[in-house]
Image (tube, rainbow, N blue to C red; front, side):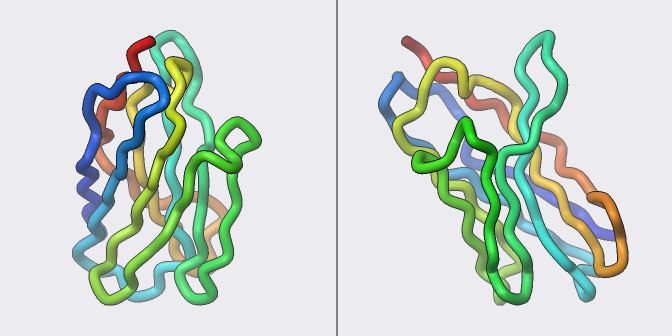
Amino acid sequence: QVQLVESGGGLVQAGGSLRLSCAASGRTFGTWAMGWFRQAPGKEREFVATISWSGGSTSYADSVKGRFTISRDNAKNTVYLQMNSLKPEDTAVYYCALQMVASITYDYWGQGTQVTVSS
């Protein structure tokens, strides 16, 4: 089993920045990738960004490209999401997720952290 704990959410004004962290613990050996997703009220959960655990390759949703940066610290089993130039439409609960090797989906999810961007 793997446990994921997010932190770093909060209230920020439009144009501001936040950095989310997600610490993984438990049986993390065999991690293939970690990602961030978000869900706004009344909307479906959507992909934000992902990073491969070995090579560090990244991918982003078009809506956050150039504003958000995903990174990882393998030694700490932690993934980060630096969010700059925040917009009110970025308001959502942000979830981190972990994909294991040979899995076609994300296998583990955190409890989520609220990000609220005021206009």
